[in-house]
Length: 247
Ligand code: APR
Image 1 (tube, rainbow, N blue to C red):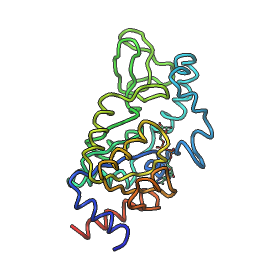
Image 2 (cartoon, rainbow, N blue to C red):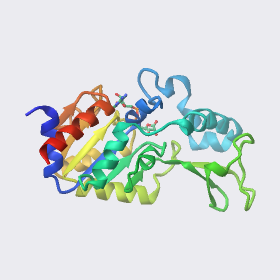
Image 3 (tube, rainbow, N blue to C red):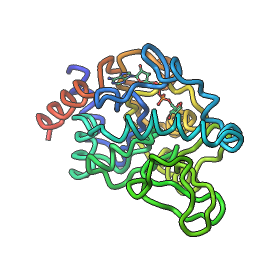
Image 4 (tube, helix red, strand yellow):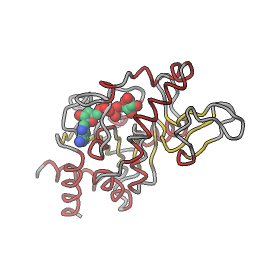
């Protein structure tokens, strides 16, 4: 049995399979990772994504946010790895996707049960009255955007360093990690807390961990049972073929 057939059998035999994704799954959609070669943090100071910095120098922070996230992220499409996870959910092979990504590509690909642990760029929120607005309605030429209801400062609905994880996403992600008997990790270093604790929580409950990454991560020698050292699109294409052969 090759590694894809082994992984496919674990997924098919599982009762509660979930995916846990990081920036790597969106690299082949044209979004650079945060770390490593070509990582965004080589070009931009992560400090600009500290909530304190955002509140102190809002105008500058918004300029950088627009440059990275809205100018870049706004024009990318899901790739075959995103579509494969959506197909797995539709076929009842996958219960949900826990993602660290803020690019909305899992939803764009058709996944329904998506827990956005670090929020989403799709909405911005007023820090005064809590009003939420779809980013498509925001004039990005005039920054920082202010609330049309109360005039308050608007912030992207993403988790800045120093901010708490959104309650719903935290609850659903921990619940899914504890229920899972199979977890597919795709494209994450496993270095950012508290998201990086979820695969360990799953493992503690006896979950089979399948990892897809061209490079080893914090998980590979600690929790991973089946390591597919490959890019997300090629790995997921081969995995779907192996699943189709077995069902
Ligand atoms: N396919 C699969 N994995 C890939 C690919 C690819 N084509 N290209 C790179 N990778 C892997 C890298 O080997 C690395 O392990 O994706 C990972 C990207 O790592 P990071 O950029 O650190 O992304 P991630 O682990 O998701 O970071 C977590 O950090 O900055 C914060 O909030 C941000 O959600 C993000 C969090």
